[in-house]
Image 1 (tube, rainbow, N blue to C red):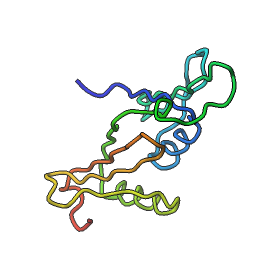
Image 2: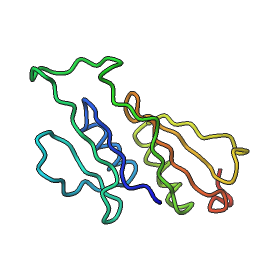
Image 3: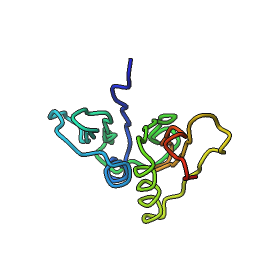
Image 4: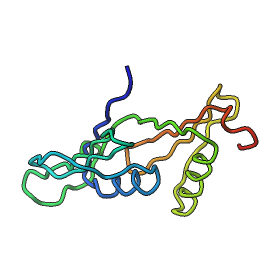
Amino acid sequence: MQLDHITIVANDCRRLRDFFVEVAGMQDGPRPPFAVAGHWLYLGHKAVLHLIERPSPSGAPVVQSRESAARIDHLALRVDSAAQWEQLLLRLAERAIAFQVAPPNAGEERQLFVMPAPGVRVEFVIARQHLAGYG
């Protein structure tokens, strides 16, 4: 088995779309004409992240609350090279996006965690062997 896709339902899909396109390097791509707004984000030719705009029952703006917050525990994106890891760190720094890196003794992989929207945590992971000479 492999990851097929993750779906996030949120009040502000644009903010999430911008994060995953501008920071994570996904591409906004074709999406079937559903009745609700949203985006399908691609890695290569595969739609891996489906963002769905949470509709307001009355058409009024949704007031952010615990019940209406976008919610998944996290999704993990694997980084394949030290160069990609370094580019990720640069994009996060350029946008002043806070992140946490798991301690070096966390195993055979390095993990970096970021929250691009309330209730949405993203893990970027890379095999430590790809980071020889990097933190």
